[in-house]
Image 1: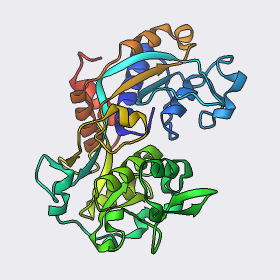
Image 2 (image 1 turned 90 degrees about the vertical axis):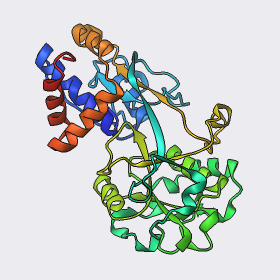
Image 3 (image 1 turned 135 degrees about the vertical axis):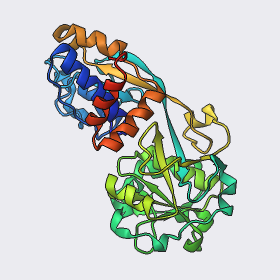
Image 4 (image 1 turned 180 degrees about the horizontal axis):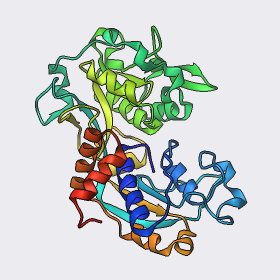
Length: 338
């Protein structure tokens, strides 16, 4: 599964049913390396976190990991790994989205247009406790490939510096925030914008592009971990990146920022300045599961959750303190699903 809470709760539901209905023991593993790690896991790579570990071993030995849920990205072939053997078990009824949010204590509107952020009151970056943040050099802001992609779309030589054998984001002063061009000369005018530590380079790239293209005064930083992310949002008037459906990080009805309509051609060319679009949430299986446990294979193919299901599961999990407790409570209240 992925590191998103929607992936955790859907996996918890499936695990309970596999154990109690079919009698198998399950072990859950989070694919901290993102969707591509999930593909490598079900394909039998010896170390799913390292694509070079796949090689001839993939598909030739019993796999250790058989199911991956809430996968929100197609398999991406590379020179090292042009193909992989896995089974696409179809999509969930709910879809995934990525968006830009602020707390409803900053605005009570259900949504707000990006150009209206200037009329809201945010904290300054100087008031944010650095204890909860990573320095830019230890985050995706130091990803040279991502920064090269940023410069391909935006002419912003003052926003980068040399490092890691290429260009990385330039984070002035104490090195915790990258400042958008529109507030770089006066950081007190910047809006703090936070990422969780598991967010991907392409997510950071999207926000940097939007800030530059639409003249949004964002100051981008990455939280040290999940608890730090929740703490910094709870204690600051700020903005944040979020996948949905996902937990509300302790917030009630976060407000989404609206951008110009999605331009699929621009996104295909690496320009992410317009709004994102819904993505399919896939289920993956190992090729040998149908032989090892055909009834479980058939169950996962049929397994489905709606957006309403996931939202209830997330709420139950938060209230009860764990994903498994939330899933168990939800299954007791939805016996027809089981």
